[in-house]
Length: 344
Image (cartoon, rainbow, N blue to C red):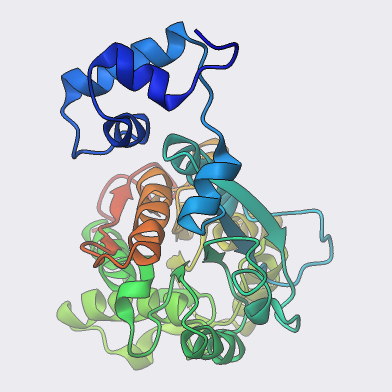
């Protein structure tokens, strides 16, 4: 046996071809499980390591995916939305499971990120998370499309290419929030979060909320709406403006959990009780949501599944395969910030 084992050595001992060894080591479904297990066992015995540089050279691939993260502007740039932190963890695991390296970069919307990564062969494709104002972001996506860049993004539909987007069913999530608040007997509602073309995910949540209330005979004009980006500070300021307006409200649906946490702080600073005076509902189910006082009822987005789908679908695009599934159904998580019994 030579000092350094090769795939041909494994093929000889396993009684298969070298191409079968290569497929087995990539866990290709073209090789049956028994043969894959046998090849992996021999590879471990020989302390065989895949030469990624040689493999990538043959495939003209880097086996690297780029994750570009955009955040809403905040006063502290060291803070990252916990929802995206959870997503980052799931994307990292999904890449590792598929033998992909992950290049993570934080971007400003004004940068020329759209012309950088795949063109310079740093990565085979791009995953985009977050975007600030979608109307500005959309222009960059169109340039990616024109360059035939392999990319997927989390959130809003890409115009003309909805398969490039992995998203939660935001409208259904908003409907679930509205139906839950109605079931508890709440009657005067507000939505806090941007509801415009610049924030399409938030807007879909607002529309779904309106759908549920309209089914119950409450017109959209009766629903108070205050803008807020996804930060605690924005939620706190928005609810302060709402309370100072003197308009009656007994339930607030927030476009994100971070907004909801700020809203809860603002309500409590005014000496009001949650949910006795005002119920609060969030969206995302970030880890801290279960530790607020009171614990926050929210709409859950499955970040583990989302990360898996982003990586899997991007690799499908890289390999010129069709995307099969791109939407995740949200689930309601009931805690105590909305109350537990009808107000009658």
